[in-house]
Length: 395
Image: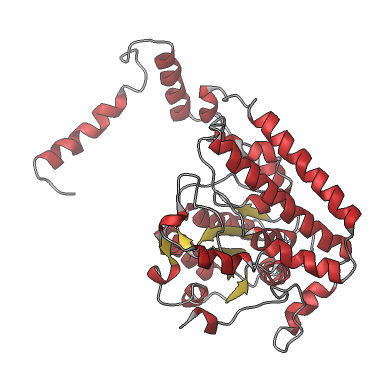
């Protein structure tokens, strides 16, 4: 099926006009209550997300970050989704959900600790109900499904109390749908009616591999194959992303189970700063999507509805400039955490094996001999099986 034939939820056209056609009235009702200040808030967070993105890319080019994954072009997909979240909801991002973390309130400098290599995460997930960036492709989907099943068993779903009922969102790209972890998460979520939203940002490229080389059917149909309600939305339409996510979260919190949302968007930048997109895509294709820019789309709507003026734009520009300066100044001052920090957050309480590993590591760092008595049992424990394999034995 051609991409132009696939049903697509759209509430705001690329020209910045509200869609009033038939067939989307339920979703239009969900955005009808959005006040001008809420729309301005969405616009602000999208603009600041892009400024963060541009500054982080520049810092990497200057050698201040080891790597960076740009999200230019995906601001609406992320901000619209995040605006539908309740404070108690929990999110599991990939390494590119900068807009989601912007809305959740994670400090922009802390977001760059991971990319600078000064911290394994950069923030305390429980302060924001937002897990740290995840690099292993698709693993966060299993984490989210498991967390959602835990929420379910804790009695935090279907109570009817809007301040208590909780949902989970996990984010991944089009390429991750080919990973076993994502498909296993869909199985667990479906059979357990887990309160989780699978939010696939189809930005058209799994690094350099286009979506048609990854799948013969639209990605949202993956969810349907597991018995999960699924839909595709215009990922450059912040209102559609908000409405679709709100519907899915309402279903999850009330005990209705998971939803699969495909946000159809485009990655305007490189996959990461180690990537060269000019080797696999054309400037003509990029120009088509540039004319669908999510920030321009919302700005035009706000202008047409008299919701922003020159003063607001000037204040936002000043805020973006201040953000850029703060990122440049503070990121360069980030220093690595202690080497033993990785042992401190494995378990909530002390664990004998972790304590033993830490003792070995501290001894190693201090220059003590390897046979100082730390973790000496491991080689003996694996020796019998190693011998069996060498002898051609099976188990």
